[in-house]
Image 1 (cartoon, rainbow, N blue to C red):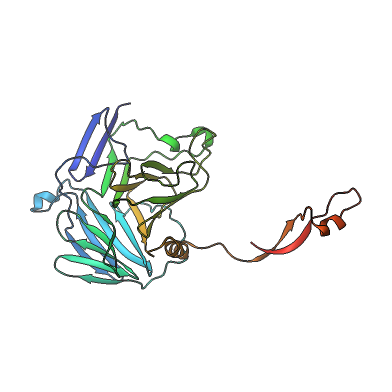
Image 2 (tube, rainbow, N blue to C red; image 1 turned 90 degrees about the vertical axis):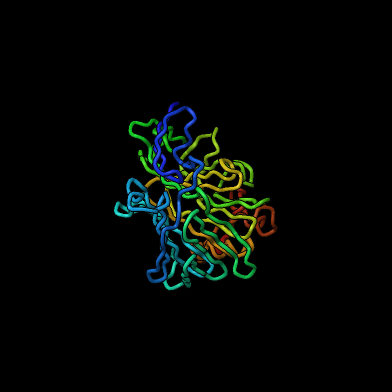
Length: 332
């Protein structure tokens, strides 16, 4: 299948049409790194950065140049949200309810060369100039958890008339097809040596996700696919952090598969938001994640349990010789 894509990323605006064109959810073409952080500013508890797709050295560089706006905020201690926007004027994508999100968290620091936002035990730092650099570190040790660096951010447009295979999102029989879209945004976060990735909900495959391409899309995939019913856009790293993509629609992951040193995730539309969840240990990360997204309600309810084989059940046989189930209080 021939595909024609227009890529707006590290090498500016390009169009291509050939049999080896990359997926419409990837966009790292060109060897020259021209993305930069042009400026940053603070508005309340949110840190903003302007990220053009090429270096701005003159007024002419502002023409035909896609510009991304990156916003950092802290919905709760130990969690940092990152929102990447190309055009913010259109309808907002539907997002998950986040009952644990609160205002007023995080402290921002800006100097001549960098800007940072600290939330609990983690800090996000953006460097001014080229190349683009966003680093997440652990405050106690200074250890880098993950980072978004050279050619990590990407804004992708499909060329007019392009024929693109929708994969699992194109299933008319299941009535769960994704509407056609022409724009995508992706982010790539670094993987350390020996770092392992887990999660993403129910999957029919290896527990360790490294080397896999995973699509988050809740639909009936039949009996001959890896598609399951409980897809969750959250993964847990062996380095002691988690990444939650706030998009209930189609999220495409390349976990050390397209680039072995990176995890890429991409969504349709003009914006992408994700959260970096700190904690240091898997248990602590999951505590932070569920505190943000919500936990199951604990309430008492009636449950029915058949106590087969017990002396009490033998004495409780009814007139037709069937043991009667017992009712007891149970937490659910």
